[in-house]
Length: 145
Image (tube, rainbow, N blue to C red; front, side):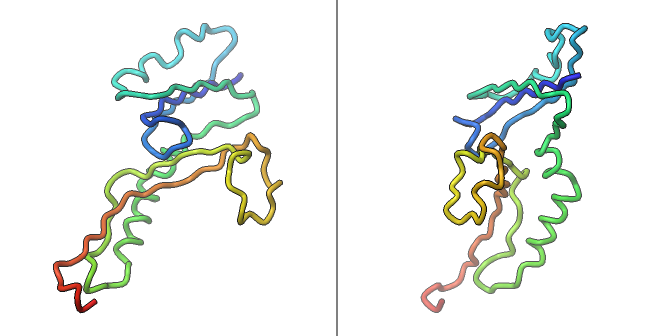
């Protein structure tokens, strides 16, 4: 059976970082696709683009957003910020929200510093992970910095 993946993007294009929603559903040729995940699409915020992709039967679909926002990954990120070296000028950094991921086809990626430009097929999606964090400067006289 094939899998259909549906993506709804809250940004201008899927290459940009930002929130998006994804659903992957195994579809059987015997069942009508009109049943496809209707319940999962209620309550989505404004979206700028929707993309559907019918995957081959041997292709595995995984929600990267779920993976990078798992409790273990978020704890790891938070622990890295907590372990940052102390700095009298900057308050300890902390994560502001969920980890975001964006995709870019390898064929459109900047390969200026890539050792092997043929490492991937042009259609493969390369992922960028984005973490919004805050690191305020302390109220110090920066003329002494």
